[in-house]
Amino acid sequence: MKVRRPAKRALIAAGALLAASLLMPSHASASLAAYGGGPMVGGVSFSTPIPNFPNFGPDQWTFSGTVTGMVLNNVPAAYVGNVTVQASGGSPFASLEDETGGISNASADGRAPVVGTQGTMSCQLNNTGTLSGGYLRIGTTVEVTVSGPCIIDGYSQTLTWVVTGQFLPDPTNPQNGNGVSGPIYTADFVGSVQVYPGLPA
Image (cartoon, rainbow, N blue to C red; front, side):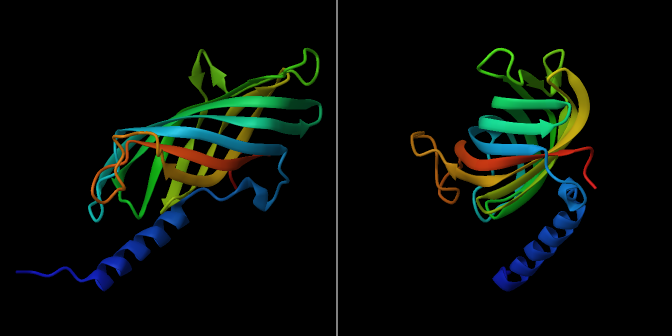
């Protein structure tokens, strides 16, 4: 009987993570200052859950969240208020330890609570999100980079959204396992977003 060697498996996983990090878009912040951002909370639902540890396989998910009190300041356009974020994505090769994947048709939409005060922002067209990109997750820590055309207070421009935070299994869902004895179907997200001008560097 062939015995799996944990050390070798760890080395392969580390190599895969290094390659994935090289493929991820670099931050626009490398050369440009952020327009602004804010704290983000939300939840993810897996239609195809991450395989139980130590297995690998595809996953598919949808995300819904809110950026609370987002402040974007880009003269002459600006926005102050909450933003609703929707996204979907997946990875062809995910595990409990790590994964990289793609995101398409992500959207962000906001209306200022007081009429006439830096009023609207939208990253969608005909009810379809205009942001796309990729993500990297290591354990519970995730980083997302998406970009695309948005309209802030009536002005059209290309923006890059960089989201970082933690995904943790939703403790209120009785279907959820711990990723070892059973799959995780829903998770909570807590993190933040920074918004930069243009496309990733």
